[in-house]
Image (cartoon, rainbow, N blue to C red):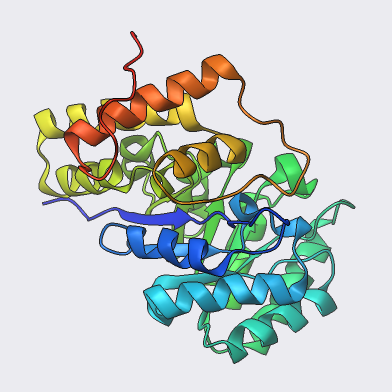
Length: 301
């Protein structure tokens, strides 16, 4: 049997009609995921974390711990500066967090020396697990394979790769053989595992978690027919739902989770896209989730 992939859901942040965090919607969303996901990344990019106050980020982390517990919650505490990230880490730890991810310093590009100093400061500040979060497309800061080796020597436990960095799983595995490595390319789990990855941090799994559970289990059991079917489902879901936070939120609303609108200036899905989303959800309902209305129109592929 192969190593069992780990499916971490990159959680959204549900807002109410006034734009504030909606506690009941966020809790319902997390409870729906709990039987299927191996854990959640709280207050990450999918939660629009740059738009959240420190208190709001801590609220999301606390609700995730309430539902998933500290062992299955990764608190994203990254910030533009070390001082901000340390403050966020303390707030998350006060809420019970023991696993922390930190996106690289962002907006202004940090040098590799700056990246190493940033993670060294975070590592020295906590005895919990600490993961680097590399997303150069939005953070404007990258992390080289050599720096990943240095981060492993500092005691970081893993790295999450998103955007263009997600193609480097094999390279980073060679550079840091003891680290956990997750890819943000949630439609490419078999490729990630073949390259030596640990699993995926998936935003789309927050809408259709059973698809990724089936794929995870088929890969672990080395069942080619089931792997092919599950991978086809995953690719179809990613094609329609991602990468777009507004599409995820629209889909969740169709599933009865009032996720609200995006706080950041992200365009809402247009009419044809909404129709396509309803189509894949109807297909998903027939296969996995009887709570989804099955009278939604199926779109031809």
